[in-house]
Structure formats: C-alpha cells, structure tokens
Image (cartoon, rainbow, N blue to C red):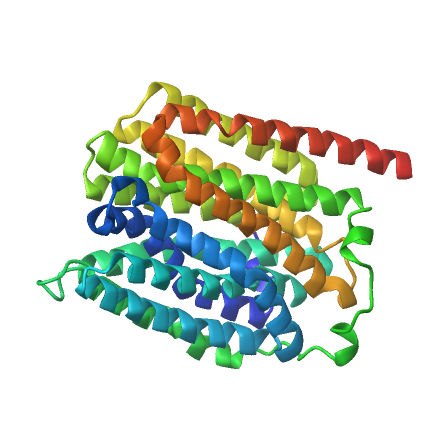
Length: 394
C-alpha cells in the first residue's frame, strides 16, 4: 500500500489517532472490569462502556455542527482537551470509588470521541477522491499502535497510586489523550465557507434516494453495532463467567483491536480493485467465523479467534462503507451526511452496548453471538438490493 502518496494532513491525523484512540481502547479494556468492582450490581458492570458509546452517539450531531462552523482543527483540538479533562474526572471517581461519577467521565469521554470519528472524513477530504480509501485506511491502521499504547500504558500505571487501583491509569490516560491537541495544531484544513454550512444541498431524505448512501449507512451501522455488542460483553464473559484472568482478557481485546485495524494495510487497495460490495461480503464471512467459533470454544484461544475475526470483519465492512459514503454527497452536504451517518452508527452502538451486559448475564456467550445473525442477514439483503437498484439506474 503506497502510504507515501498521502498528504501531510493524513499523517498528522494518523499520529494523533494513536493517542486519541487510547480513550476508547482503555474504556473497552477496563470499563467492564472497573464497573464490576464499583457497580451496585453485576448487571451494571458494562454501564461505563455503554456510557462511552452513548456519549459518542450524543456527540455526533454537535460534532458535525461545531466543525461545520469552526473547522476541523478547532473541533479536534477541543475534543482532545475535553477527553483529558474526562480522564481526570475518571481518576477522581476511582479515588473515591464513585461508580456513577466514573460513568459520567466515560460519557463525556465518549462525547469527545464523536469528534475523533471525523478523523477519517478529514483524511478523505485531504486527498483526491481516488485515494480516499487509502487515506481512511491510514487513519484506522494507526489504531493498531493505539491498541497497544493505551492498554499497556494504563496497565503499567495502575499501581502508581497503590491505595486505589487504576487511578494512576486514568492519570496516564489524561496525558495521552491531550497529546493530539499539540499534534493537530499544525493541521491545515481550510475553514469552511459560509455557503457550505447553510441550508444548501440535498436533504437527508433526498440523499437516501441514492442506493449507495443507504448501503453505506446500513453497513456502517450494522457492523459497528455487532462489533461493539460482542466486544463489550467479551471481557465480562471471559473474566467473570469463564474465569479467565484479567491479563488474558486484556490480551484478547488488544488482538481484537489489531484485527480491527491491521487489515487497513491492504483494504484500501482491495476496495479500489474489487469494489465496496465484495469487500463487505468478505467482512460478513469473517463475522460468521466469529459467531461459529463462539458456539464451540470458550477457551482463551477460542475467544482470541472469535474476537480477531470480529475485528477483521468489522474493518472490511466499515472501511468499505466509509469510502463508499464519501462518494455520495457534495461539498455543501458533507456535514449533514456525515452527521446523519454517525448518529445512526453510534445510536445503534449505544443500544448494543447498553444491552450487552444484562443480555450476557441473562443468556450466555453463545446466545449473544447468535443474536448477530439477523443483522448480517439484513446487511446481505441491502447489498443485494442496492446492487439491483444501481443496475436498473444504469
């Protein structure tokens, strides 16, 4: 993959993403475990993770509005500062063993992450349209480094303050998520002109007349909801249900995140050569591997294979959907279209993460994996439908 052809903005965003992604990776790693320690009931154990996802959903529309008026750089730097403050609140909550305050810190951390999700759009806007898949892949690929930097730093720092576990972790996290504010000071994306933030361009209803737009939104929403649903439940299932160690649970989550982002080395080129729909079908195949393995193997190796397959399947579908949606709107419509896409994606994520914990305790690891089959069936139907519609139009 020819990353050297990408612009300076893409490189800055990729480096910043290593640190800005730390907030999400650490919350997915520690949120359920800390929740189990602090929550009044085990059924609330995944609430901090759910709070982060709900915060991201709540932040999608404000993120689009702020950046349409103030520009990408303003939004990204402001989000970095908010994330750092949220981590400090999290450290304070852990010091005082306050479950609900910890949940609030995860909520605001999630709201800042809504801005981070626009890194991929900013990268796509910084290169010619034919290089957009590679630019998006570069951003996601940097998440591989974030998958190891975040959890490893917070694990190293967890005993900085021996009286309270993980307080040091969140102090270290506050530093990490503040770093993008410095890096992105040199980001050079022109501030949008007033004509691009007015009511010009097509409405969402008009955009949904394009089958590619519908496919892109449905694919991103279904893949992200399924990924978050299973990933949120996995540390709790591994550690509390099947008795695997926290270290093993952390290792599985790390490799899951590698699976999420490492295919970005080549997925951009594959999309260019073979098309968005074929890559989505391969992604669905990987998600079927995840669901199948979960039915027969709950060892550490079984969880590892399931979660890595989950990450790979998500990557193929999500990168394909993002690179597809940027071809469906005009400049004056981009914040409207992107905001709608993010609202759908993270709204579904919020429902998935909120329900993951209690559904796991009410059923089983095998059952919650099987619950992903209807989503995959829906996505297959939309891929087929959109293909037929486009053939009719041409």
